[in-house]
Structure formats: C-alpha cells, structure tokens
Length: 123
Image 1 (cartoon, helix red, strand yellow):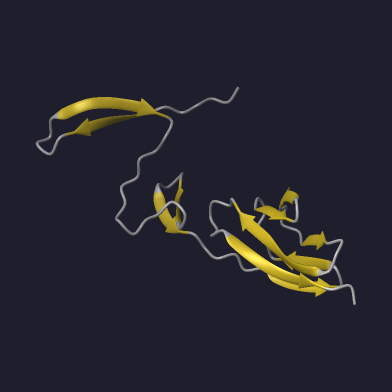
Image 2 (spheres, rainbow, N blue to C red):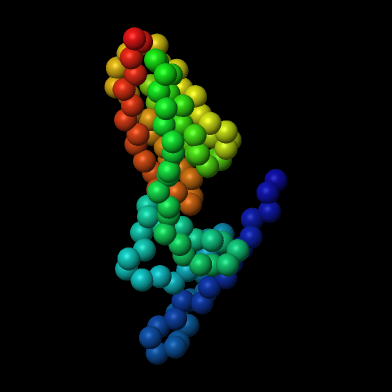
C-alpha cells in the first residue's frame, strides 16, 4: 500500500487568530487569479507553479496510417474507440476507413490538452 503524505495547515482569520487546523494529502500553493487548473501545474518538489506547454507533435500521414512523433511519454491518446498512453516513441495509428478523425491528446500534467484533426485516404 502506498504511504500517503499528510500535510497540516492552520486556517487563520485576517487578525491572525487560527480558526482551525486542517490536515490532508493535498498541497496548498498560493497563486494569483491567472492560474487555472487546465493551463497550469505545480512542480511538487519545488512548489512552483508553471504554465502548461503546448504539445508539439510532428504529424505524417501515409494512406490510412497516421504517425505522431515528438509526443511526451505519459500522454493519453484517444481516437476512433482506441485509448493508449504514449511511451516517448512515435505513435502510429491505423484507421480502417478513409475519413476525418479526431485524435485527443490529454492527461499529461505539464502539457495542454489538444485535439488533432487528421484526414486519411486509402489512395
């Protein structure tokens, strides 16, 4: 079983009086109103908030096969009923029929989610 790290926090009134003490597994990191959960992440070891980076993939299409290179490892990919997680090597997706498909790239803490539209043809 994984050990859960428990953090303790004092919740204080503006006067400085402690209203209560709380504990839990989460880190509370002060931030400004520009920080959002879908555009930023916390580097847990340092406690620093960073903006998520865009996913920069190289796309190539050969008939009914799409290859995406340059994807980070640990990215969730969903398309046409298939789900997988990237491992840092080029991702190869083969479709059964010609058409336009969406490839959803999501779930990596350091990168913005993205939907890639691809059109494949068997010619």
